[in-house]
Amino acid sequence: MTLSMKNDAKDDATRHGLALAPTSDLIAPLLVTLVVAVLVIGTVLARRRGYGIGGETIVRCSQNHLFTTLWIPGASFKAVRLGAKRFQRCPVGRHWSLVTPVRAEDLTEEEEQAAAAVHDAHIP
Image 1: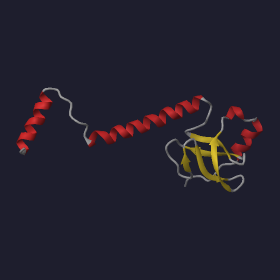
Image 2 (image 1 turned 30 degrees about the vertical axis):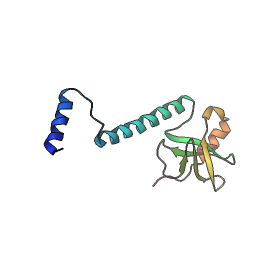
Image 3 (image 1 turned 135 degrees about the horizontal axis):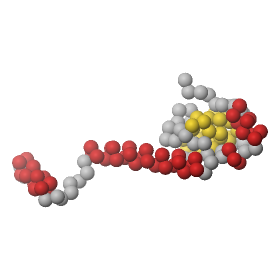
Image 4 (image 1 turned 60 degrees about the vertical axis):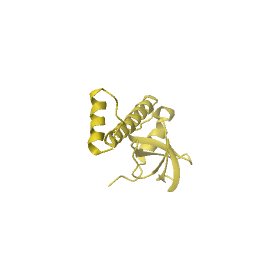
């Protein structure tokens, strides 16, 4: 089939309203939009459940130490993301550990103050 015949077939499909296969030009923006939507929805749901996701967040390490860290959904500058947990350095016990967000309402006032007093390394 010659190039002009291929173009004619494509023009006929367009004129008759036939759908063409999605091009790679469409796939990348759609994937980015989907990922952003999932992150936004996840953040909104987590915040509604009382977690401080999307900013300064109180977390608990596997040895029950509490501290505050910057928790940005979909991004990780100081930790390895593992779903709802992260592997990062605990500034309280000075060890590497899995950390999980903690709902402020599940903490006593003293625990909340202690967590706010200890922040992990700031991003330069």
